[in-house]
Length: 265
Image (cartoon, rainbow, N blue to C red; front, side, top):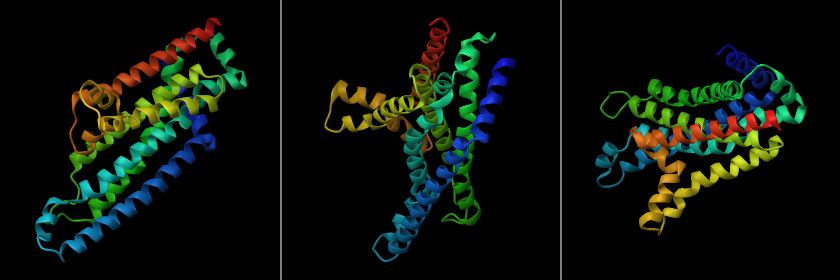
């Protein structure tokens, strides 16, 4: 445990003393702000136009800031995590090999599982910091907005479920990225391979269009976006949680086996 924490501190130092983590956090904040502003403007336009059409009042009763703004923001952030996490995880092991420090790490009395755990936990800290920035947007709505009946503008249980889904998605993506970082020879190759795999999982739901039977069920079961959707609606279902945890376990297992194999290579 002490060794894992030492690796965790070392990786966090690398993340935050180099531009890697700061660039990710700034880009996440900027991207989220753009989507948030666009969603909020669309919600404002919808509420304005609803008063001008028959039945508009009934429509407003079915629309809220959580579904119209926050869920849309979280869905966009989910895709953004799929695209950016490979570049956050690509250097974790591959960079050690490129600079020649991996051999020194292998000669130390450290088990591969401790190396993988320390590096993975460090990446999760950066992910949590990014999602904390995203959580500021619904917090702003909660302070500045007001519900249709005078209550709170935000349904926090739904927001919490959405943030949990994003964290699980990011954790799974980082585990996949760590596995490719341990397998690939360079960080760039690791990033490209993990990006292709993660985009394939995210877009797997497209194959459900026009498909039927077992093929449709298989594509839906593999789709990362399909498993994220219930979280954005405020529902935490065991199959969706297990999907992301399974990806985490698979990625970490492959990374640990790859590091162990490098020890004896």
